[in-house]
Length: 459
Image (cartoon, rainbow, N blue to C red):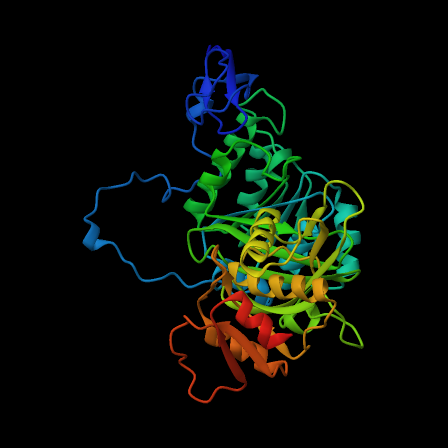
């Protein structure tokens, strides 16, 4: 009779490194005080047993092949009715891929993937809910009001029971909500522990690759915004998506942090409603400010997020400080970048911001990291400083250097075309930008070299 072996191991919360004893510093990721103790249970034969989903074909051993004999023809993707989701994934769902999406509680992760599964009406979809009952999921599906005749629900957390149901149904798309609730019978520690997440994610990864079924994993995040669980989870999956947004706005952003099948700079924008998430195909029209008259402290920036050009409003407020230390408050923009721009304006332009409170906001609740936003931020700051409005038909794209020069940015033609669609009349860019590929420019393009030059032209 086989006896079971029970052992205690220590796991690094950051990277998943396993150790037989507690260590102060992880030798893999060099982080301090990250080891936690967990009970690991492995039975001699069951630990190495083949997964229940495996067929005779999948049990065949792999053979060595020459690299030139490997077929590199791109596998056809599954296109979804959601154009924003297709863009973020790089053109659609890759068969056999495993995708991890993470976000804050209540941001809409479950709604997004329930809606995605219901929209895939030509595929057999299985939605595994480890956090909600079938009735709760059905109530959300009723609000979405999308009919799907081949959509199935399963409320279960034991992986062996899951794979027994999966083998019977043979779904074409699998959605797991969430990976932190699953438990493997081979591990004795509780659900959500480092060892459980590694084991269950590994089992789902094998299932995805051996059956060519795309798997979507919904994950939690920690207080500091990183994905909960060991870092190895992000290495195991093919794609990592971040679902984010401000609770006070309806907009939700789906960002790509890792993608083995496409770009990592893509961005999908959704509008949250009671009936689900509506893709925003032309966000520039929505993000540009809503005001009836020209006011100081506002400028329009043409930035690039992924493959799409995006026009948005930068708002700034500069006031006399009433406290000893001036405030620097930023929303949607890098606060350290703002300090840099203020220093450049003081040194190169002679503007005294040292005694001023400065507030900068990106309208719509977005968070943008494109350096081309610098020029619009500077114009909004100067507009509020001088209390002189910037013409609402002007648009800006340029990076600011430490000597006050306006540096060139990439893909300027796309930015100009996007601005022209929305009726802008004048576009300010760096004079160091290469010659434009557009022959007949749809608007006046003004080239400037330094901050003081554009200040004289605009004000």
